[in-house]
Each structure stands twice: as structure tokens, then as C-alpha cells.
Image (cartoon, rainbow, N blue to C red; front, top):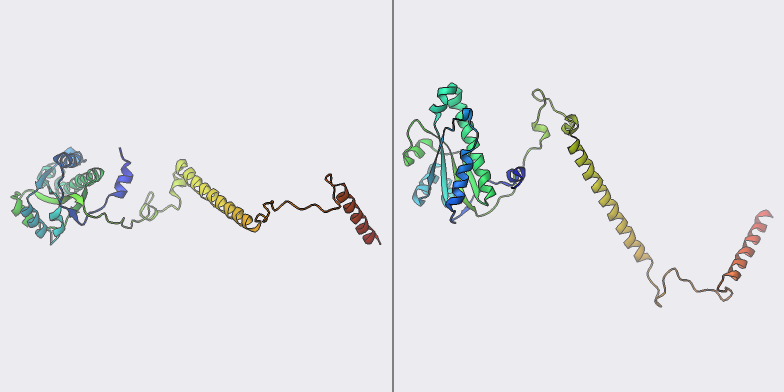
Length: 263
């Protein structure tokens, strides 16, 4: 199973679709994900209409204020709600708010399941509701909440910018922010992970600098033409294999130096 957070982060709103077949198996999985969404009181006050016909898709694209790209998707899923079903239990708040929340959860589930199957989606909320109802014979008491275009993406858009977590998260009251939430919440795992990343970065930097120094030293000390190593030096004629003559010369020079200093 894919990491759900990575799935959420990598999902994109698709602008253009390929005219490519999508199997009923995949479509049914997307619908199944939608029907398992949470709802107030588990009332599940939603219904789905699948639109395959090219002419119907074109007509729906027109009443979506000219979003003609969705007509190229393999199918359009029209998400409808039954507001009266919720109003019976929760009053006007159920009709005006909970119904919208229920169907929004449905759509999000559909988008994520489609993305996990390699399909692209586009959540359409801008449309003439009355025109959609007329085209699909939807009763007056039913509300159209969303249209989901489902198919294969022609291109995958770049990730849009998102606010970081800190400026949108408050603690205990409005606009009460904390500079380091992980430390405040005693999230040891996050703190250690940050320290590990910092230490790893510093270690890589040290390794990189060491390699550069090694390369520069190698360039400054090239091998001689005759193949001998830079540290090899030709012995002077006066020097024997055991170095005794060299040691005598060094001792003599030292004595002369001490004499000059003492004088």
C-alpha cells in the first residue's frame, strides 16, 4: 500500500485528458472509495451519475462555464446529494453545511483512489446547477455538489505552492503560534530526525572538503620523469647506506651553530 501522505502530496488537478479507455474495474473502485467516505450520522446522503456519452459530456462542459477540456475525460461523475435526508436529523445546519461536507469527503476519496490507480481527475465545482439538473433529469429536491472528470492525464502539472505548516497552525487559541512545534509537543522522533539530517549534511560536507584537499595535494606533488616517487631523494656521495656520514655532518653543523650563538 502506498504511503497516504505521499499520495496526497503527489495528486494533481488535471487540465487535459487523453481520449483513452478506462476499465469498469477501475471506475468501480473509484466509486467504492467515494461511498466509504465519512458522513454525518452515517447517513450517506449521496448519489452518483456516470456520464459516458460524448454529446452529454460536451453539453456538461458547456454548462461548466466553458470547461471544454473535461469532455475529453473518459467519464464524468456527477456527485449529487439528498439534503432533506440530513435536514430531518440536523436541521438547517445539516442541509446547508453537513451535506456539503459529506460530499466533499466523497470527492476527496475518489480523487485519491483514482490517483493510486494511475488515473487523473479534475474536481469541477463551477457549473450552472439548474442546467445540469435539466440535462440529467435530476429532481428539484436533489442538489448537485460536484462533477469529477476521470480519465488518463495528458500532462501532469507541476506541484502548486503550499503554505508551510507553521503559519497555518495555532495552539490553544486563535493566532497562538509556536516557533518549534516538535520540541513543544515533545516529538522526540522529529527532533532526532532533524538532528540526524543536520549531522548527515555536515558529514557529507566534511567528506567533500577532504576529497578536494586530496585532489589539490595530488596535483602539487607529481611523480618525477624517471618514475621515482616525490619523496625519494638521491643520496649524496658522502652518505653511506647506514647514514653514518650524514649524521656526522649534521652533528658538525649543530656544533658550529651552537658556537656562533654562544659567542
